[in-house]
Image (tube, rainbow, N blue to C red; front, side):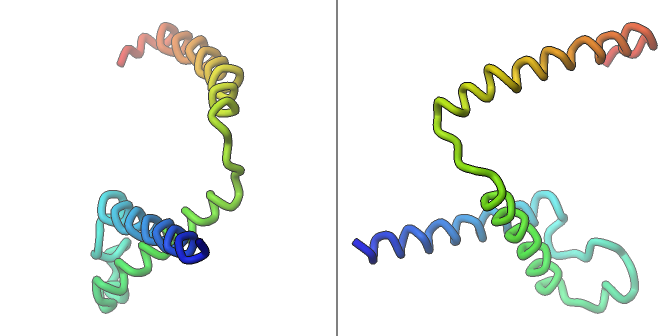
Length: 105
């Protein structure tokens, strides 16, 4: 039984590493450096990719540790009681600005 939980634990971290790699590819440009500076071009692309993956992995673990896990009924209540009124309250100022400045998307 403890072996099964250990495999699940490794699977969860493997999933986080995979998602960090995909986020690096899709959102941070993959292996090229972030800034096109002469000093950053001296660092190999694999090192840049590893740094970016570690950055996403750090953020992913940080968010998972900072926010609690919600049950299904708590998520539904959050959406109905908090997120829906916020989104409806946002419609009024955005439409007011849109009509006032004649900005129509």
